[in-house]
Image 1 (cartoon, rainbow, N blue to C red):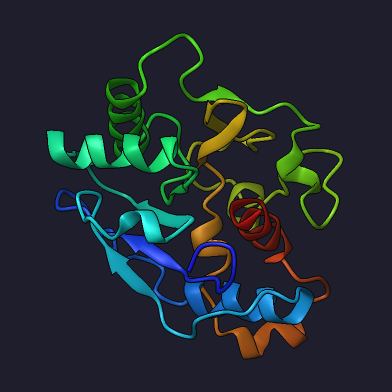
Image 2: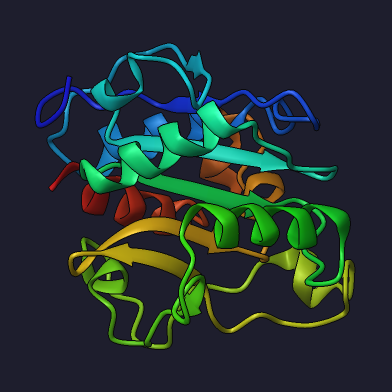
Length: 207
């Protein structure tokens, strides 16, 4: 699958609501087909961090509102995934840097990837922001932030874990999952396509 067909893989974890935002997959796949030449698999794949098949998927989506806890085997599976070129995209549905998802996910990343640069802010000229569409000001804002939900902050950054110069974990507090959780057929009613940033993430993961 790597290097050819794009598969939207979602991480299932036992501690929280991993299956939130069910329409994200179809919407992202629509954008990948619309803007790129990357072939896609139509259906979402759900997988656990300790699965031996995890390395087959260069992209892994994770979301939720609640507690994030991994056992040692799952934690090591994610480390192995990142070290082999995979990209875990973790989106905080609470869009709250003090929320339960944020605090527990960040703690798990510090356990898995200890060091001073764990979940460091990505620079505005990071290759992710130019992987396909151009985002010179960094990550696009979401209506959830602009409406004052969550922590009432507009997050003008994303964070991540890099391994050997490549982004292996992308962590966002913007709640892109809820932003993209609508029927892709309704995209035509929008002034601009708010899923374009998802295309950058996919293209980055696939190249």
